[in-house]
Length: 157
Image (cartoon, rainbow, N blue to C red; front, top):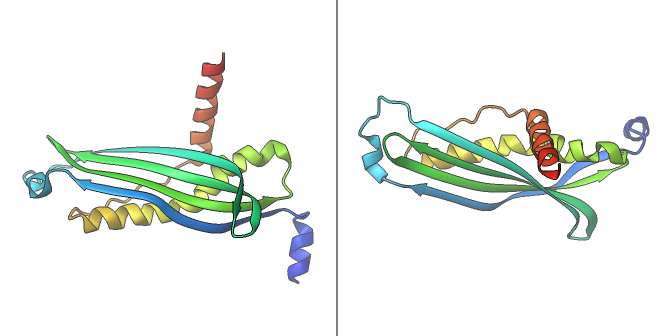
């Protein structure tokens, strides 16, 4: 039965070999003074970037793809409250896909698989830093990919 599903995919495979936090930094800028206006909603700024490396070798696995989600989050009321920087990495084995769809797989599908872990880490880190948990909204990685492609095309022209 399992062999039938492999045949149905024409030898295509997408799997996570490993995933980990490469870097995590949380700065509670003003400590308890951040809570003087607890009834106000802080201004939250979320920056997200996707980086891709090809041809990675990890623990005997060759030709892997390393996809990292770099997230920078800052919160402020009158002054900065906290800054969270996270670099979360997934190493993917990807085989059998046509070359013309590899870029969307790497910049859309792989980050989509990693994002739930990033959301959980961000919520827990902010909560453990003494603030209410921060729940990141879902991200449309296809739209983010299109925006990055358009920006790259403009700079190349």
